[in-house]
Length: 363
Image (cartoon, rainbow, N blue to C red; front, side):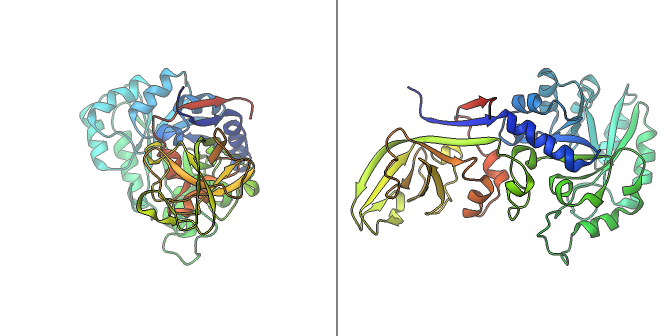
């Protein structure tokens, strides 16, 4: 018998979330961001679920090639561009569009010219200060790229550091300040891609011709202060495991490594077949919620490599074989992440390969 733990991917939720983004995109094309194995949801599943998106956005050439082998025939964009000269041939072979964010990339394209057809998007650093050229450099970069035989510029893009509504209006990198830095670039005709998930949902004034939808497609709000219900999105992943043992312990007895959780009353402790080696954070504190038999049961004690313990004293229905939702419909991944000082993105992307994945087409 296999270990009773699994991740369920809800295909209809992925499709529904895409359609929700379609509404807020208001006529703009959608790049579905599928890097990091589609935020832990599986690239194969994403290619199927996001078939109505205009393009896929990936991190590196290998992901793009895999998407092609899975049957994706529309546009593909490398969000950080190519990483070495050896990638350039595959841009043409697999019709992959690339971000250009540095002069070394331009030099690499020159060294390997002429090309048959390479499409480039110029990345502008509008204040996030990770990748990209400054706005006044864009015309020169555009001219250098267009001077390379077989290379064309098809887009300009930037990325917002703080498009969430709860970001302070006087912060150093607001959307308004970043838009101001872009200047006239945000008004170019064709190929302008500015909005990430948060800007797509909350900042319609950003505009552009396309948007890059990431976390929202997977059913997690890009702003933890704004709920899924408010946004009309559904979690596309359920992470669950079963109870494999139950212990009755007396007041004063402790649970787990370090004995940090100590019973204050006669307690019923359930052991769940999930640990940090599966992707459930070891940093999760006592009291973090799980969902079992229709009720919340708090984490009790340090998470082990292969097991965790929950207090089911107030959930008498919970017993060996009961399914415990770790995150999903009832325990939103953003809410859980907040308990251990991280974000939902990290939990979704950190699932271990050893966790079996199931596909649900019906919910």
